[in-house]
Length: 95
Length: 99
Length: 194
Image 1 (cartoon, helix red, strand yellow):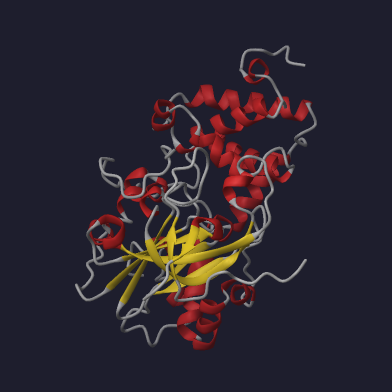
Image 2 (cartoon, chains in turn blue, purple, brown):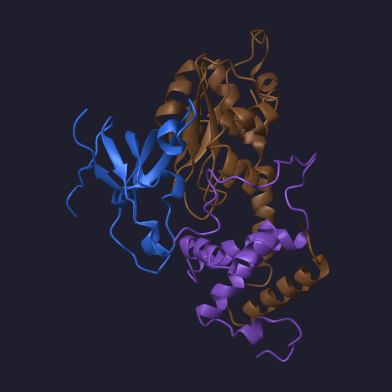
C-alpha cells in the first residue's frame, strides 16, 4: 500500500456535506453544511457509514474540525469540535 | 435521513438529572447485556457500527420509551435475527423447546 | 426508566442460553467479561493521569501530544475494550474550558474510566451542551468568566476524550495521591472545575 497523504492540513477551512443520508452516519445533523477549521488529524479508519452496512471501505483520515457556535446555531460564543471522516468534508477556498 | 439518536442542538428534552451514588449498572441484567454485546462483536457476529445502526433503526416510540440498556438489548436481538443466528421466535422467552 | 426488570432479566438469560447452545458463547464467558470490565475501568485511573500531569510538566506535554503513549508510562492503557482506542486529552487553561459530549450515542473512555454517568448518556445533556454549554455548566455549578473560551468536543468518531482540569490553587503542598483524590469524574468530562 502506498503511504496515504492527508487531504487537509491543520488550519485548512472545510465544509461538511449537506446530504441527509439514508442510513447510519457520524456527521451530526447540527454540523451539516457548515464551515469549520481542521484542528488535528485523529487517525485513519474505514467510514462508519460503510461499516454499518457491512461494507469495508478503505481507511481514510478522520479530522478534528472546529466550528464557531454562531456558524452552527446562529448564536453562542463557544466552539464545537467534531470528529469527521474525510468523505464528509470538501475544501473551502480563500481566506 | 436524520435519526432519533442525532439530538445535538435539539430543544425540548427534560432537564439534566444527576443521580446520587449512581451504581455502575442498575441491575444485573444490564451488566449481562453490556458483556453480551462485547462478546458478539468480538466474535464478529456484527460490528460496532451495525450495533449503533440497529439502535437507530428501532421504532422511534420504542427508542424513546426504552432505557439505555433496553435499547442495547433490542439492538442485539434485532441483529441476531437479521444475521440469521436465531429466529424471532427462538429469541422470544417462553419457547423452551428452542433447538 | 426501568420497566419490568424481571421480564427483561428472563429475556437476557434466555438469549444467553440460546447462544451457548449454538456455540456463540462459552459457558461462564459473560460473567468473566463482567468481572474483567468492572475490575478494569474506574474514574480513579483518570484521576491518576491528571495528578501526574499536575506534578510532572513533561508528562503533561506528552499526554497532550500522545495520550495513549503517556498513560502507558503509568501502567494504563486504552486497549481494555474491543480494541485500543485513541485517547485525546484536552487541557483547561486560564482562558479555555473544555467539555466533552457524544451527541450521536454515548462514546466515552469506558475501558479506562468505567461506565459513564447516566446524565452523560441522556438526550437532555447531549442535545443541550453543544448549543448552550455555559447554561449547562451553570446547572452543574460551574460558573465561567465571560472571557473564558468554552470548547465543546463531540466524540463523533473513533477518539475518546479526557479533560485535564486546572490544578486548584493552594495545592502546592499536596502529594500526588492527595491531588488525585481531588479529581472527580465530572472534572474529567468537563462538567466540574476539577
